[in-house]
Image (cartoon, rainbow, N blue to C red; front, side):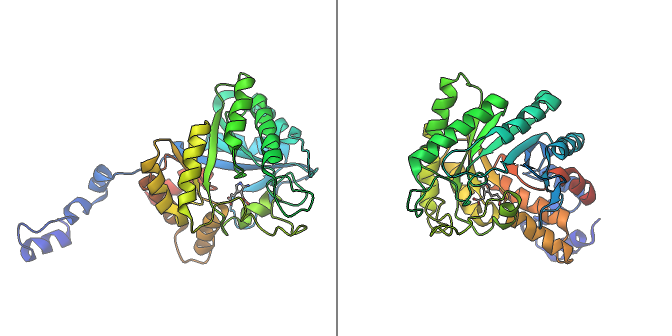
Length: 340
Ligand code: PBG
């Protein structure tokens, strides 16, 4: 018998609550555990970049690349072999604009993935303008350049979402944070008989400082060419969780199928609260800065990476997420093997 338990037999009164009995070995711990992360719940982000000749590593995001159209297909093939079959695609066109945008580059990647892999993969596509605009803001600016216009932006977003859905996306995922975009996208999809395309709304997306590595990957940092330096006028203030509730209720009413909290760990309270209050499937986005933080600690020998990643994912399940977008999806099976 385990040393501690026999210790306890002699030293603790019989009626003392003995919680360690159920922790004494892996077999028992496996039987009583309440949450178990599975690769099935993970979604892997993909970046497809127009106009580069070789794929490029993304600082901080181990194993994530800015892919060329060719390397994208190879990467996904490898992921499928590793058991990952759910993806969210970020298309990064070379041609940037201000008022009108072409979704053609992104749509080509969707069609190519669909043609090559058929229904083997679940493909969500991020819908936003920040990789498409010359200034890096998530929408169209007013003539003075100091405000992101809502209605003209929503119009463009709905067109792009429709284009991606027509190209074969299973799910469109608007991350822009304009008002009314879910309703506009659902309307556009319905009008075009695209009744089975899911909408996953980034409904509780905060104005976070943890998006750094992503913005390098997606060419999407605000360029500071206007007086707008950040995204504070449309993303949710970290100190106003009330807004996250209001926009999530609204997005559900406008036709979103899946709601999301983003980032993850710094907003676990929001995820836990909203997933109890709003009966919808909840996604969580473990954003680039969170993932990179764990990787950097692991690199410096301060934590063991696989364990730390799995601990974060377990926390998301505990807080009510049923799916997790993470840069570590493609390593999940490896992590799990290393731990056993
Ligand atoms: C685009 C968008 C962002 C992320 C996903 N979609 C960043 C932003 O608002 O700048 C962040 C993802 C990450 O950090 O991993 N609007």
